[in-house]
Length: 289
Image 1 (cartoon, rainbow, N blue to C red):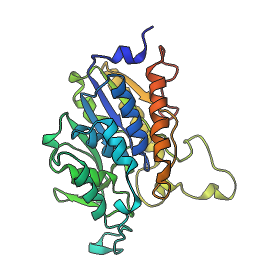
Image 2 (image 1 turned 135 degrees about the horizontal axis):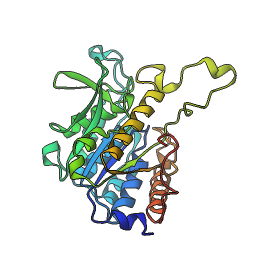
Image 3 (image 1 turned 135 degrees about the vertical axis):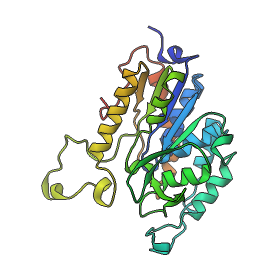
């Protein structure tokens, strides 16, 4: 059998980069592996951390340039303490430094100027709806998609307050389904959640506590996972080959950015191992099986 990378050469491949807390290092590594193997997305979608990498690539940066930008990131680039309840929107950080950094690193600032179709997943603060943005300000859309509730101030777009798309959906696959006639395959770079899988119960004194992902806001993790599974199934029913990449990740956060290089490298090498395989044994993710 041919290697997976060879099977995908010359194909129209859509790429979906999922959400995950500070998972942009991981997503950059997976994207780097794809391009290294000659697999360039013809369409790309992203939510939260995935939106940052997807927008950087769609706006003109190459994977190595994205890597350099991310590895140069410092907490001071986005850590600007805001006034709680400022303008009636509770948040720890004002978000202005984050938006300024996006404006600095993105080669273009509008969806219409991107080199390939891009969709960014966001979540409505007031109505709880998932949306996929495809026009207008790239900076505002990526900021909104990455605005972790209560950490960053939500972004207003077209009269709607929006924040982290991962609140309601991890994998923005609907835009790929809508463009299914223009695709041969979809690769989902899936960042498994830090929460325990649905079938794993927490024992002891902590068993009665809500999981972190649903303590404050958002769709329960089980519901988001089921939505992802349905989306994958719909794409396959439409005749598309859907490949879910789930290489091991290096967990990190705003106070452990020094792990960034290891996170990029582990994801890149894991994705290269999958692409170099001549069978599907290395594919998949237990959360989406």
